[in-house]
Amino acid sequence: MENGELVHHTLGDGKFNHFSNMYREITVAQTNLTPEHAVEEIDRVLRACWNEKRPVHIHLPIDVYNKPINKPAEPILHKPILNNKETLDKMLLHAISKINSAKKSIILADFEVDRFHAKEYLYQFVEKTGFPIATLSMGKGIFPEKHPQFIGIYTGDIKTVFMSISYKCDLTD
Image: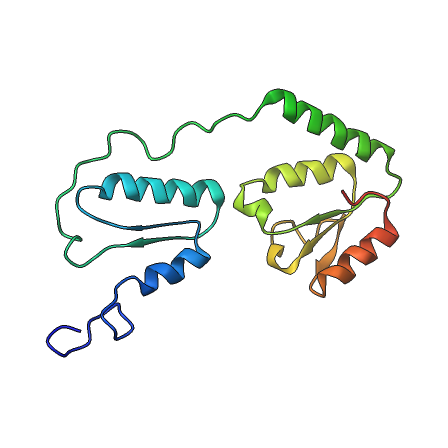
């Protein structure tokens, strides 16, 4: 409270960190901007958003929003760090072995395919393998529903989906 009046962005108790604490529970990164660190903090939080594909929270206090800041010294996104090629090769060989030994396989895709910009890779994989594909409801639209290999959208209990799939196919990894 200021002079007996409620202040915005509090819960009426004059404490300004309630909302930041709430956002901490549902975001991958948060910041409370200051003129001294605005550039670095904005870039840090946006990088986390891009890399994790999850929400972030940037608090811009009213006494900071119109302060001048320096232009970033480098691009916000650096070249991606390449994963260990040896580990990726082992994982790929394991996946290929599992796929080749399966008699009945199915692809179950969801929204992460879109978040990681992999729709074209999914489409190519379905085309090359000939496997049937289904999506979960959050993944609706990530694969053409008129495609002959598309078998539907699962909207029910996830346990039921996996039990149903496991009875119909021998590869669920």
